[in-house]
Image 1 (cartoon, rainbow, N blue to C red):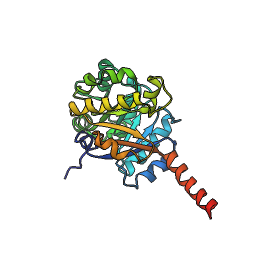
Image 2: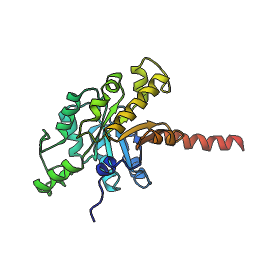
Image 3: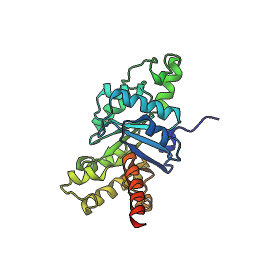
Image 4: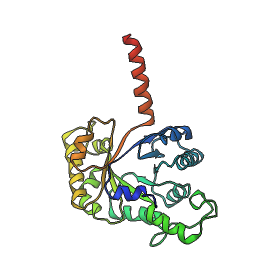
Length: 253
């Protein structure tokens, strides 16, 4: 039986829960791979991942069969190529604002109809053992590309962006939206209204939508608004929360 790919599950709007990995440690990814999470997002935008650290973290994800998206620092074709050749399940692309920008990124992720350069000598090609046809077919079928809506311009264009067929999903980033809307409050009414607008536009286009949450307290609220992809907290936040709970327990005793 063929295993359902992460991209297919995402497009089917299955409920998917993951977390950010912000520590450049393959052991962290291995540990998360033993949990019931559906995916991880390796944060190469805001965390100090070298090429070597990113490579070993993606190896750990593959070893534990944990789908791993990489949040890339930029949308350059060379960046996209390196991440996908390392064996990433897909990309999380920051600051989606325009149709042209999205199409350029998508082109870099696709062989047929795109501009992705071919080599099967990397992990993605099983180090030279994967024939060209099945490798191209599998990559074009299974690589997931999620775009972040975190700017006023992206919100204003969301109806048009959500209609783009090859986009697998959008992810709402409330913190950057707050900055874009001129506030320091991610729960500000203007930010909330923008998030709802994104959810409604994605629902109208039958496009999966996700959101970052600091914890699970808002989970049901956003589910009711049609969100199916949840990035909840991070490895650092999970560590701090558990450590604080232990410390508080001892202080109360």
